[in-house]
Image (cartoon, rainbow, N blue to C red; front, side, top):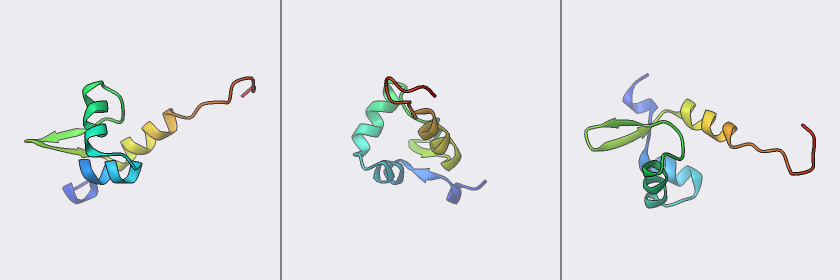
Length: 65
């Protein structure tokens, strides 16, 4: 994996349809996918984002899995 394979903070926010500030807030609250900090920059592995998205899946109330 190279640096070019990682998503920047702004790319991740855009893909989710939220602001960078929302992503920053969620990270401070320890909500969201694992991230990599290199210097002052934040990056996300696409695999970590995919895993986090899948972990957010919920079964509708009243329905058996």
